[in-house]
Image (cartoon, rainbow over all chains, first blue to last red):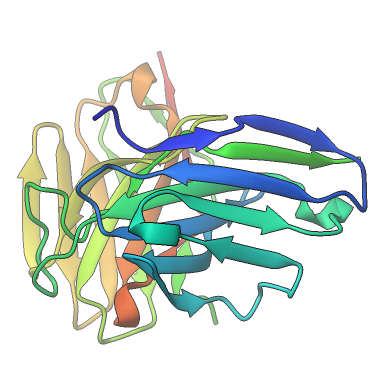
Length: 122
Length: 110
């Protein structure tokens, strides 16, 4: 397993188009997170899954954003009718479940990030 | 109020000096605390985590946690130019959500 994989790495699109990003987490990790990061800011939480269940979604996420994780494996993040303000780096991270407050060598309760998918909306 | 606050910097230190990075958080119920390093154009990579009050050392890095003051810090000893990056403080809060600060940019001058 080579870590968290994200595709595509770069996407340039015109305003109004739909885009989809894919994330393949570390295979034994049951939690998957999506974050958005703009220049000079830290990663901003979008949503997260435990297995196939989407357990939390940011209030900042408009209805144009949707995420899925069928079968609890890879996940997709779709942005419909893109706007210039959607231009950002979209980061996927995964972790495994562990005792609350504990970080284990298996990566439990620690986020491991993919390389990110950079979106530019023209 | 943001969940995690960091001074954006830049923090400039000479090579070989100690760099001190600080972070405060708002949720007293937070259980785990993390420092990530992010090079320009790259994704964050974990440096250290801490969840007990006190100090935790790993090589040239020391994380310090004071839950009463809601304060986390990272010390980098013998700073190297390769340490120049943005350092992100992250806090794991309720419902397994991780909150990140906006990061402190560190410049280590040769």
